[in-house]
Length: 284
Length: 254
Image (cartoon, rainbow over all chains, first blue to last red; front, side, top):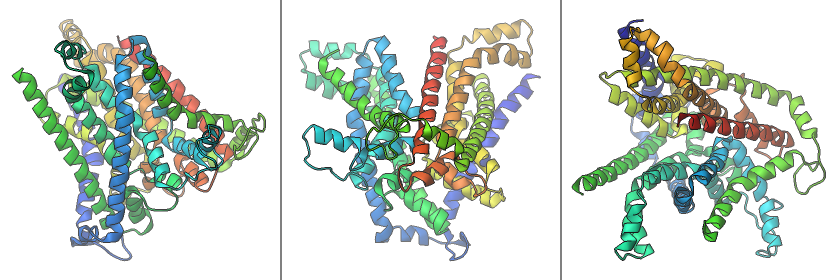
């Protein structure tokens, strides 16, 4: 094989695949969202903004807002639990660091549906969680966790936590710990050091983690179904309903476009922070 | 390590592992609903093997996972090599698109595939699943292989070329042998991603081709199914094995 043939083969193949099965279908979703709705068909070939207007309808708007709230809470608690985890892992001696990461990766590589099912198993009124709380004397009678928003959030955090921790950790690996020592030597307390040295320098990791958690969370319809009961809690449930049950493609597509828009805004925010970040670096 | 940080690790790992451990214990529990320990049994594993629908779905899922992991690794490794070796127009765009696809929520990929397949007239079943799974595994494969390539000594390629190797020989004799661990890591990751997928599969498969996640989903929607516990235990064991293998592969790099 000559250089040009190797080159042509390797690049063309992947590019073609990505265009046909990546770019084209996403473009089709965008186009579908502007099509007219038809009671019997998936869509009607005419330009219409109806689907976007329908999104403001309280029936859908409520689910959208609730979904954003659930995803925001999931992201917040994942960050709250994940940030110290990533930091403490970063501070571990090398040997233990790998162990902590492997222990984090195992659930990450385990089937997410099975993990959701496992969460449901321990949340039942006669499940392990209730038994532990009863035994510890924290509660007097079993609490109903299942089919509440808290159960859904708990399940979502359970699935998404590694997606928060890994970007945080990758970012922290580049962190020069001597900066903390320098800050302390210059008289800053632990809190001030954390606020003005650690947080700003790990901000890209925080945003990356939030991007990895926030938008995908809204699509995890099976978590809402298994832990939240039949209620439509997430945008994912609505999209699934409009594509697989009521066959209203334009409306389902419009909802997806909103999700993509949220993702793009978060990426934009990341880009802005990174730009300020590198500008400050070069100013030093 | 300070006591408080040790405690913190324990809390997080209990949260991550308690559900999995309870599930594993219950797969050996005589008590069908896992409410209390009634004694040790293998009967749920027997029930699992006897459940034809479940076994058929498992077979289908394995087939799709093996095929899409192989194809994604093939395409992804050539793509990564191309992106590493050559500078071409649209390289940035290709890299950007791959990274974006990594972040696009599954639900959006799922409907995008569905719209495409219906439009092209692809029957929903094995082929639609394969095309969709290869596509969402591809960015992971490219990134895994590219990361390994970036750790290479670039002079190795120049040395091979100076010694008269053709471009094909450079790939065959130098690049691919060095890439072997990354190829295996990419394959394992793609296999896992394919087997793990619920969202994309539920949109792009048809009634004639049942896959594991959908089968499990419909089985556990209503309650606890001990056969599912048994299957889950096997799948968890597999993930543990895969993580250890891929970590060993990464370690070899250093």
